[in-house]
Image (cartoon, rainbow, N blue to C red; front, side):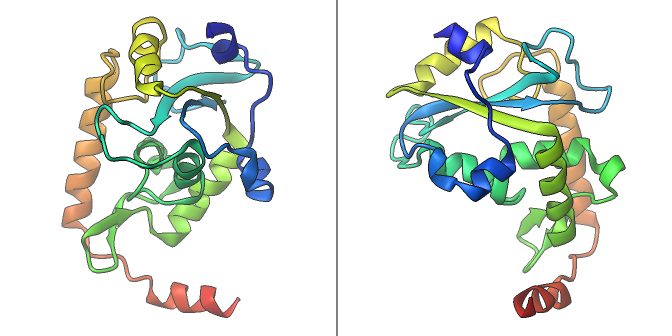
Amino acid sequence: MLDSIFSPAIVYSRLDLQESPRIIPAENGIYFWWIKSLPDIVPLDNCVKYGEYHLVYSGISPDKKGKPNSKSTLRTRIRTHYFGNAEGSTLRRTLGILLAEQSAFPLRRVGSGKRMTFTHLGEQWLDEWMEKNTRISWILDPEPWVIEENIFKIVSLPLNLKGNEHSFKSILSNFRKMSIEQARILDIANEVGLKRKKELC
């Protein structure tokens, strides 16, 4: 089991999954995010490596322990991370916050003001960054929450928050909290023109 996690037979890019969405199985399992580089504040020294990539985050689908009625699968969850936005993806929000200085797209309130994303342009920037810098792998398991608990004990995963006791957790939590507080102070981002332009394309 550990060999298939630490040395996956294949890892996929965002483009791979965009072109062939059914590559991702609509089943239970645990997925792993491999990232090439992150800001220096993120400790990568003890992370598992795969070529030039570091294993920094894992997720499960469904999370029957935390959400007993969840019907999500690997396919729905991974697609949310790769093709959704920061409102629905903890991973996208974390990455966008850590990369905000580089992207110049801070977390913002959008729409009615109840949702927070990096705006359409910021999410597109993050899509491109993820294509260049991330890869994903997964393994199937009927009860992935059991594997997750064990993995947290033996693997350094600096970007996981829930259920993880990594030394970076408090720093990351503070970064996220400050970004949310800043977003509440900033004006709601006006994206009406951009949406119309997008619809005409």
